[in-house]
Amino acid sequence: MESENQVSRDNNMGQNMDLVTSRSGQLTDPSSTDRSAKSWNCCKLKLPSLRALITLTACFMLELAVGVSYTMGNMMPYVTSYLRNVTRETSLDYSTALWAGNTSWIVNSISMMFLGLLEHCMPYKVFLMLGIFFFAGSLIGSYWAVQTSFVAYVIVYGPFQGLAQGILWPSGIKVALKWFPERKRFIGALIMAGYGAGAFGWNQMVTQWINPDNLQPDLTVGEDVYFSQPEVLSNVPSCYLLLGGVLSGIQLLCILSFTFPPPSHTDTQEKSTRILVAVEEEAIKTSDPPSLDDVRSPTGGDDHSDKNGDMSVSDVDPEKSDSATSTPDYRPLQVLKSRMTWTLWLIKMSTGLGFVFIWDFYKVT
Image (cartoon, rainbow, N blue to C red; front, top):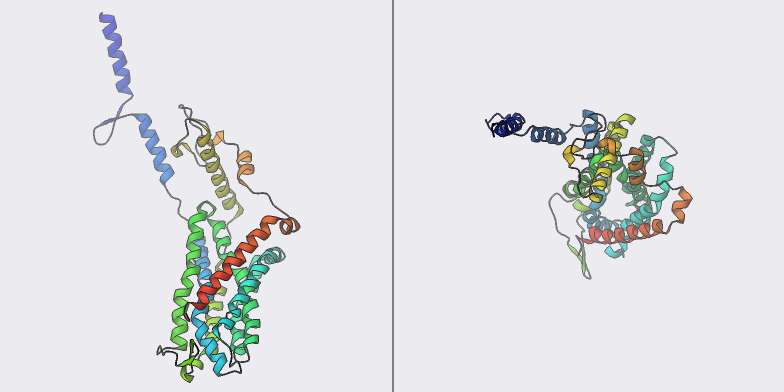
């Protein structure tokens, strides 16, 4: 009996030795302490570098400047009224003036697939400079075109603005995601917020320049109303010079501020993303999924699975995860022959034309 009691006391002592005292005086399990430490290490965020933050800000500001296309609805009454009263377009109405925005979107939808090929034929920043050239040409050129005729205005503004949008609009997201490939959803939403916010800021500038006294239309033709006040109409051409100069300058500064991460940074981030995706897929397949606390970083930590049998980074085959998560590359002719390409193109152009109707007519209806 005494020997059995001794064995029981030894077992209890062994269990007590496995317990450690926390700062609060309570006994805790060392294994839970290790798991907490690993969880804390996984929760620590790696702060982005200064170059990454500067590039992210530049991408946001680039999209903010490109978002001037949303001011077309605010400009529509002023431009149409100017063409009716100053030029010979006396029969021009708002439904016909819609062709300026429609032409821009149609050219944008058609050209984007070919601009992707042009991008690989020159340095990337030179390609972006070409976009600034088209953007400035669409606005500054409209200063002379709007004083000539409606046809000249459509020819200058529509195609040039469409080409500029096709080059500059995707670039802000593309450059930002090179620095933050593991935060694609958040970074993409942040950059696109800049594009949407462009209408708010630039509309205020347009109104203050053309119609600072907020005069109301005083000419009624059928169901439509137009401006005829000289103090309003005289400011319409110069507004395009203002927009072209300010926004092109912002875009130029943004592109000059662009930097690209070193290959080691991109490879490390992409490898980390592939491993996390592979671990999550493996967790779905197994009945005992590994916790995220047990996932080590690809550049450090022990590459062996823990004693509980949870999967670690070493259990994931990088080559296998790479092939599972990457998408195949297609040649240009293969893309053009794909039914999916033309389906997506038709969806983009159709939905875009609907957007054009909304942002062109929201002020005149």
